[in-house]
Length: 454
Image (cartoon, rainbow, N blue to C red; front, side, top):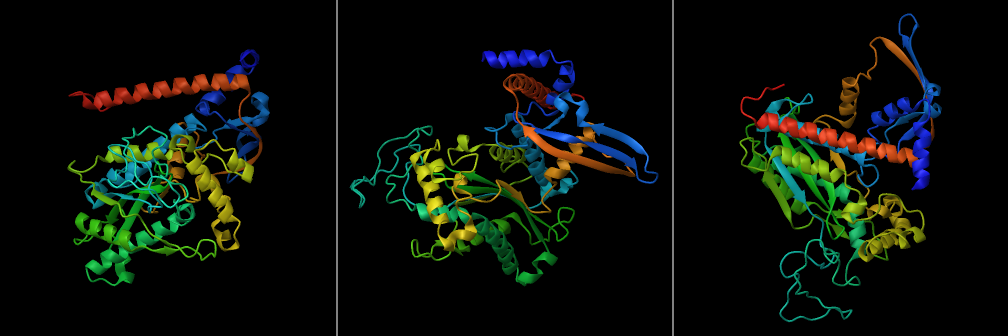
């Protein structure tokens, strides 16, 4: 601690300390900023005249600090908050409009869909009696097949298998590896179900309607991914086009449920595992989002998705935030026995040639799941890139029209010294507090009768 304090004093005595604070503030107090060296020259496109020149050699330490942009709150809380805000606006725009999406999307057929994983074996649950059985009994490995305890949701035992030898870890890992393909086939199936329901050729569906979505993958307590998705039906041109008269929420619900039941993906055959038929779990939930407020709240849905996207593996209890490169990394990982067994299974299966395309060892830290946490269709709403560009324009960092930019940058390091980390943490805390106060004032202003819209 003393060394960190001495380092902070050293930084504060630097002649360029004020500029250093400006850089840290510009990164939002990022806990692991990227250090860049280089320069940018802005030229007039017609005359070649130099309009602006920036060189990192003028900065403290001759380097420019930029955000790490890590979405995980366990890795970088400041960047995680920024990512959560972008995710909220991205999802919300597809629900109620904004960000170049018309407000009429709020009146379209929209669903909040939850798809679960298969059951790979009985696990302990929270709530009332866990797994009561009158006859008791044991499995073939001599372990009880029932549990008469009432577990609290915070208990570490919740989500753990009753018998790890009975649990199908291979199927669990392979289901994760094919979860992306299951989703792709599910979306195709929804389109087919809608087309069939109205007697339309499947190849003509795009001429009549368009299916848009944003989905987030969430790890359950049993360390199995399930999917939450916002699904919207538009006209063939996307959000600017009204859906056909036959495109109702009830018809969309029927198509979602039918597609979830029928989707089937077969894992590659292996003599060690056999051939597995992978499906969605039996629990499928499709709730309509209605503009009149009778369904789940749009802002609540967007906030839920944004909150989960920023969770790290340490918060979900499923896997790690970083990749593992050796078997010893798996053995020493700070995870539960259940998760460690899943990681070991990924490592073992990843060494089999028939599973090489699945890259299971590469994704052992995410238990075989290799998709993005958040994905969306092209026409659902805006993009992260567009939101970042809008933010850059808001703070004045925008390209000048009719100019050419000549930039030369290279990576020279990352992170903070101990003293810098202390100062950055204080800046991040202050920025977060100010942001929360501003948000509360805005909410209060909207609720107060006669409050100014400004």
